[in-house]
Length: 123
Length: 168
Image 1: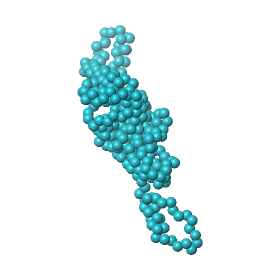
Image 2: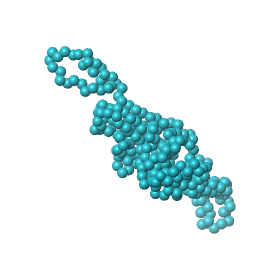
Image 3: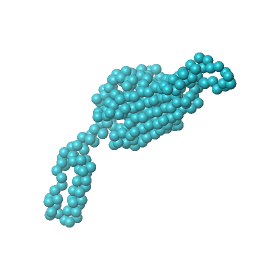
């Protein structure tokens, strides 16, 4: 294994790992970061040119840019937060008084599940 | 410095100053055995490596000079991974040789939904010759980004520790 060490700086390790793997593919074993800096782990078969490429990728790395997975996760959280805001008001069973019995029963159960979820979220 | 004690005393043999000094030095060595410890509480560690790599080749690495006794190796930390059900594996190398199996000494499956799992191990390394030995902590992940909480995460007060001590 070839360890390429860099001084400590702020990185988005997941995004940096993704970029490295996109460019250098199976040569990349992983990225580590900690008190002693950043280490890029490459397979022994990496060429000098590929080792040089690592430095260029790190120089161009913007920790504020999310990886595809991180962006999906961010979108999911945003959607969930938006849904929470949109559905902030609890179900009012009076709205279902004119509905058939089966619908009223479903609404009652939905209201119960809603209360359980709010309790789990300490709301 | 430990010196194997004289065990072939003869009747009427005179005790010399050197003999007494050796006993004294051995007692002093037993009182303060060769030890190296590193505690980190200011910087988290992260890795995406799916092969075993050093956690920190400078700090989570100890070189001690032993007298040929067994060495106790201790590690503890709080860990997590940004993926659900991701494996986190820990191991140590002694003079460059990893001590665990394919999945290290210990494996913990963690979840992003879990704040952190506590992992630790204590390994008694036997059979070491007298002299200098380097012991390093290593880790790898099955996927995702593994993290050792060591104080820098918001609200975290966790400490990760790595200790080696000659114990016999």
